[in-house]
Length: 331
View (spheres, one colour):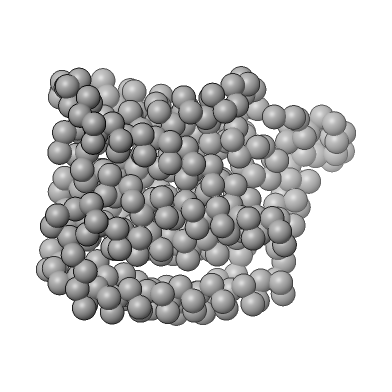
């Protein structure tokens, strides 16, 4: 129970931080390209985590590291980069609405992979929350649809749902969240470095020396990537993927409340306040009902243990000795 409380608090912390990253990205896109922002952000985050735990992470085999590589490719390289690129083509309003729909992707993937049941109340909470987020995101503005930008934002939502499920799969091998986070960042840096080779834009070092830009990059690197991703990866260890939906729903709420403080063209209107209230009602519907029935269902951890025991049997049907299992190694 204590671990679950800590996990919920860490997921909440991640949501609070990510709610501000949209604002940081919007400020930095004035000076930098989406690829430059993501690369600098990841370099800062990886360096910070390496200082915390400088131990060289072992290669854990193609099966485990393959999942981590896929997590880095989907959750950071594709998802985060897609959000930044989408900002160039469509409004932040559209992006926040589309990305907030990622929990439904996570729920569907979890139902397929982990055989989790999706309760009808989840869909009710999802619909109510999305209605609130749409009103909250409009906030007196007009909703314009841009096929290119909106499609890129949809890609970000789908890949983030995949990332959350993959991290849950990696967790069954009992690897420390810091190691997972650091490896995810490392492989993401490899992908983003390759992508940067095809960018024609010349990096302007003088823009990086602007004090405001330095502050936003430190925020994105240390908090937006390092702290937030570690918190999310740790929280997902104890919480069902479907239950993490409420924290994704909170991200547009945080952005809505913080944007007027940092952005001159943002303000809170009556329509936005109504959207905020409806969003909170939807979150309450989703969280309370899910938590109430959670104890009556087979826990996701027990399902993972079953999958793990099956996968650690050799070809003759004999189980490997406990000390030889890769997930039992110290990290």
